[in-house]
Amino acid sequence: MKIQTIIAATCAAFAFSMAGPIYAHDGDAETVKKNFEAAIPNIAGKTLIAVEVDYVPGAASVPHTHAKSAFIYAYVISGAIESKVNDGETRIYRAGESWSETPGAIHSISRNASTTEPAKLLAVFVVDTNENTLTMPIK
Image (cartoon, rainbow, N blue to C red):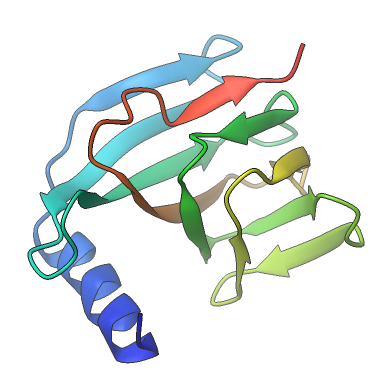
């Protein structure tokens, strides 16, 4: 997939916001809200889904993995997110920075890097259309 397609899809996700909560972890600490969902017309069996993840100050996600087919592009909208994927380094991403996750990746750290300011990221998934669960905690 060309980078222009990914950028266009991300822009479309912002432009065609479809608000509504998907789920929240740990009470109000982390809120996940679907932003966009559409089948990719030129890639049979694939869907693009964008979700916004809001973290209150000091909040963290449990270690998790995603749908087996999921390729993910994550973009920090505001604040700072501390993240570690697979055996990569633990890194703090600030507003305007991004990373990607390949299918089968383990996201062992995902948290708001600040204890005083909220943080928000946009996660854009390219996933098999028949995948029903995007995120699963690691047990």
